[in-house]
Length: 274
Image (cartoon, rainbow, N blue to C red; front, side):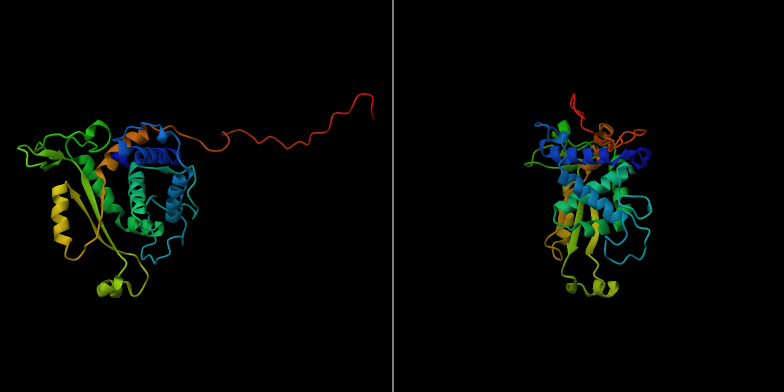
């Protein structure tokens, strides 16, 4: 896990890895049209807004009992926003990836940052569990999306297709998120928050394999008819490779260079004239 917690990735590398994952996971990680080589400005902006909300005091409006809560950083930095000089660990990038998934599900950015701040340790433990499974491999990207017969080695859970004789390997990991707008239905939450307008997230859950997800859904169905389900093992196992394959892009002038002075050019005098 040391490599996952090591602070080493620049923001340009983070953007490149997350965009490559977002742009290619539909094609099993294959970049058939070269989309991952050009990062859209709106995608960079989305990441920057998440980072700024986490760093700049007051951008996440809800009351915080513990001011030392961070989603994508390990501590404060003079109250400034994110800069291109910031360095991140794979832990941080994994949390950013989950944040982008939640935004895609319609959750507002301040709520995403609030949620990840309070559940950061849960997700880092999920990342550890995913990487510690024997023979851990990305279940979706690239050639790893092919079906494999289930082997009882702790690397996956079994799943059955069409009642066939052999079970197939299911190395997926699922994040179950429940966010409620109708807080008035839950008087204990209203009482605990003392009327503060804090987003209401029910405790998120992590399940390995679709069979475990099915059991959880049936368990919660009576109380929660709609839930957000996100597969996170692919992100957790693919990001380290994508990050390692990025190229550092340095913004601005090279170190040591100086700006050329703005010297006014005078017109060249005409021959024979004064």
